[in-house]
Amino acid sequence: MNTTMQSQKKILIIGGPTASGKSSAAIECAKHFFCSEIISCDSAQVYKYMDIGTAKPTTEEMQGIKHHLIDFVLPDYNYTAANYKSDCKIAVDSIFAKDGLPIICGGTGLYLNSFLFDYNLGNCAENAKLRYELSILYDVKGSDFMHNLLKKCDIDAASRLHKNDKKRIVRALEICFSAKDSYTVKKNAATQQSSKYNYVFVVLTCDRQKLYSKIDSRVEEMIKKGLFEEVEKLLALGYGMQHKSMSAIGYKESYQYICGNINRQTAIDMIKQNTRNYAKRQITWFKSQKNVVFIDTEHTPINKIIELL
Image 1 (cartoon, rainbow, N blue to C red):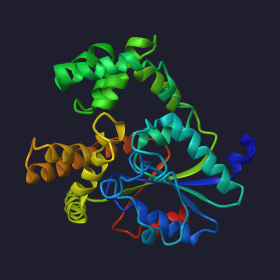
Image 2: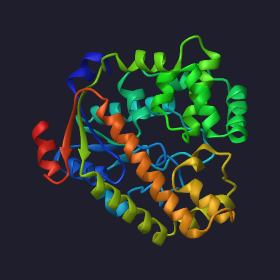
Image 3: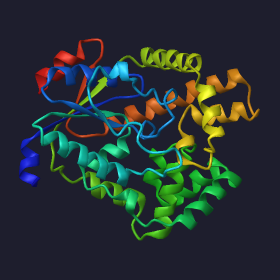
Image 4: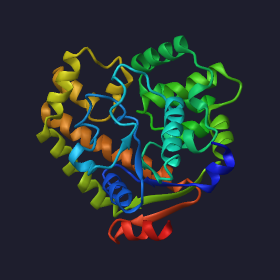
């Protein structure tokens, strides 16, 4: 499919912070438009066996709508933004071939930008040895030390990354140490370009306190459904904290509880707090994006999305 054809076809993107109702909105939109299929944009839902903690939609919740990029790699696979860029393009092209509407739904901004723009940061200056050494240094020296180190290398990246975001801080430092250009220069060079895709980008919003209440309720429901038991099964299968997938919110805290490092209630409280912090970073990211339409979930978002299309 050539670029001209791609630009004539439209993609719907439904973003928003965790627990904002993206999945249900995407399904309702898919039911409205002919041959619509949903493409997940969630860095945790790609993994098999990780269902409860990722709020992966069930078969019943999907309501017969085909979903892509959910539940398709094993937890020991190091899935990256570069993988997502390639896999998402395949899914979009397959939907375009049916004259359908691709609906990209999720809150992983890095993955979304990797697809929409020429965002190849995930492929830049890969240095597994350096990454491993930086990861160990993070564990030994702590988050404050590593965040301060990043400030010296790339103050812009450090200002956007939380000190506890080990994965991205390590990756940013890896790029700083192994490439001439900084993390920020490479990121900005990519995201300042225009996308070859014709898309409508909708972000669901709601009152901050209502969102936090939804997050807390969702975490409580995950616990009831068996989040801790799900993590125990993953550990029994041989998946552990050495795997990228297990660093996802809900899994790393559950691991600490199962290992006896923290008690049950502390684990639950940490999951809630870390999820709220993640939602705040998502909101900040969405606000920084261009050509985004914000829709309050209190005002029938489906009708407004349909109007936009």
